Length: 91
Image (cartoon, rainbow, N blue to C red; front, side):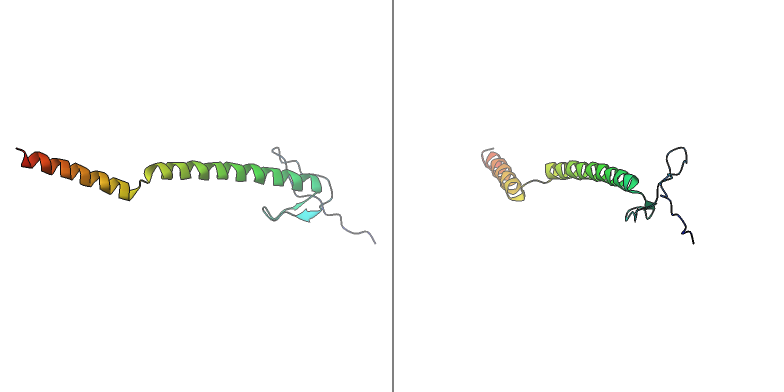
């Protein structure tokens, strides 16, 4: 009795399906993949993760540049108010 051969479900850009036996289910795309294409999918995910981490770092830097020290800002405003007050008194 011959057992059914399960093939890797990875297809390339042209739609050609891999002819290797499947090895494992990819947790990301839920396809049955051979070892070669499982590694390929992992590299793609690493690349996407790197890009996302870079984007997060850029957003964090942007946010950090927008946040200011409220106490320091408050002191500066009070100083300006005092200077204005002194100018008004001396008029």
